[in-house]
Length: 128
Image (cartoon, rainbow, N blue to C red; front, top):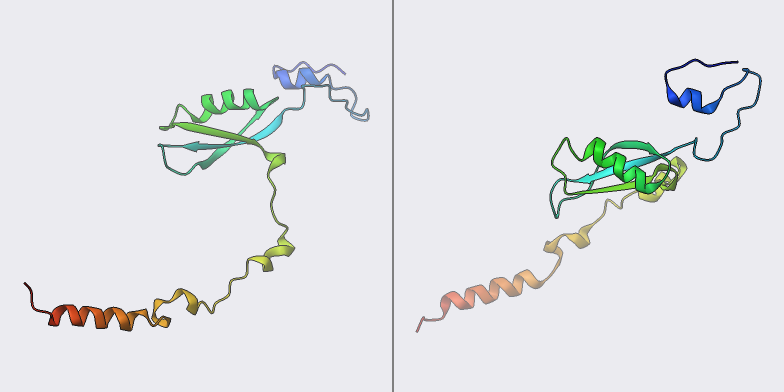
């Protein structure tokens, strides 16, 4: 079967009959890379999209062309999507928070009494 397509990706795969298995040659199957950019030094990197590239170096070039010229950008990160790890949905109980967090409330500490006593003594002392 001859594919007369103007799309080079279709011609590159050299597709045969629909029943024939497709063999992908080295370099034909590009990876997906997630792109993160930083608008100014010290700011967080934010996810802006993804690019397809055969290797990380070219992914960085594609990311610069795609996402580095539209908005202000001082840095780019690319990471292969397949390398991103995440927890399964069944593990969501791992993130359950303890609603009883009195240890974060300063009112539980006895230091406030000492501070108020110290402030009261400072007011009573005559200024020299």
